[in-house]
Length: 275
Image 1 (cartoon, one colour):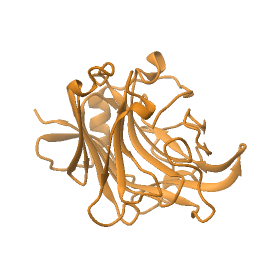
Image 2 (image 1 turned 45 degrees about the horizontal axis):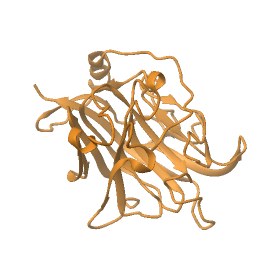
Image 3 (image 1 turned 60 degrees about the vertical axis):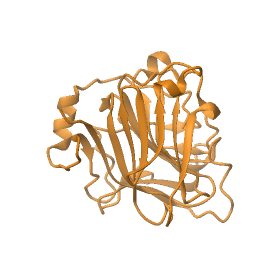
């Protein structure tokens, strides 16, 4: 998901181990070759906002993608559902001059990491115009801008293509429509029918994309040579959002598309390679 015109906020840099141990003290998972360093399991009462220790709200509209929604910090658009999920909910309503509302949350200044395995278990909405994403943005965005900061789209999805996921990187010389991307169609079922695990494994010089542990895309330093610089050797932060309309989605929702709908996030977990 391309980002431009982002409204910044003061940065509070937190040491990895302080963040990781604080977030992960109640959780553990055996994953060969990886150690869990940070997690949000989204447990809590219905209507509770995402944990402010880890999440910021980006409030506003468009973000450079011709999106149609206004992203709010209201529980109506992003809150726990009481069943162990975060619900980022898009609504068809008149708000701040827009016809839709949704939410966009980030860990900027709260959790940032270079390299590792970033995974989330997500159930997606359905219908033309829905554009959910789970992605990473370089923590130097405020100083160098986009795409020099780098962007790793772990998962992007068009609501009218319920069997297809996209994984992409953006950097200088290979951004927006020139991003290095791959699409993957699941062999059975649909992405709106059930939860699926979306992941990247990011090491020095290489990034690999997985859907339910199925490898579907690899980008290396060599891949981007001749296009531009490799900008994936510094910390990135996490973004979860549901856009409506915009350049990637294929257009505005058609009249028959159902609202409200949510992207449900069961958990999000970050690992580092075991030592």
